[in-house]
Image 1 (cartoon, rainbow over the protein chains, first blue to last red):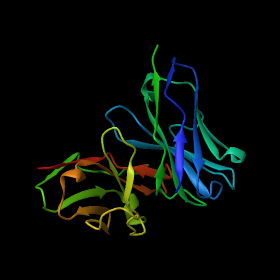
Image 2: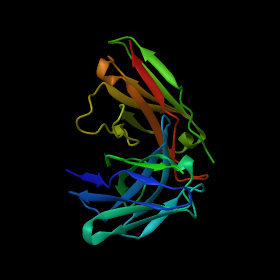
Image 3: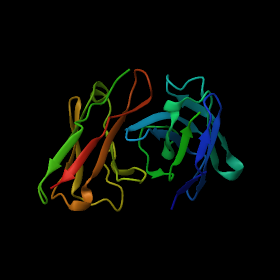
Length: 121
Length: 108
């Protein structure tokens, strides 16, 4: 059974950066897309970006391009999401989710437990 | 970029059939995937774009599509089906993956 375990909650100042980790166990880490989805308080889900570890290929939303970096460390089956230039409206729960084999088709069968990132002066 | 539109709220009587819709131009080319999210929990995949229901998801959950509208049908709704439901799909204009705004299902 695939498990995705994320790092703990973070409190950050505006303008700083945050890096959230997502460690996978079970299944094949390299072949599947690993995506990041966030949810602001009381709001819906927002796809932010994805990486396919075996190709090292990333995709980001137009909105997050330039501020978001998704990387992986295959030796530890861990993915990272780093968001820079934080603003109060980046306050959200950030989820990692496993996508399809060799591509992100929007179908996520396993999710991390979520990491709350709070951006406050 | 494209959008997926969902009704903010749907209610259904216990044991009746609930239909949750998702509309968008991207559905002309792609199927929708559906997720259930209960308060304080991560989303759960309940019906996938290739018409598969993941193991452990009851067969009362099903999906369909016609034109630019996808529908998640919950037959014989139970109290435990009360949750937020989100659709998503691939997109070719703008961002690669888009989510609908979500529908809050209330089981009366």
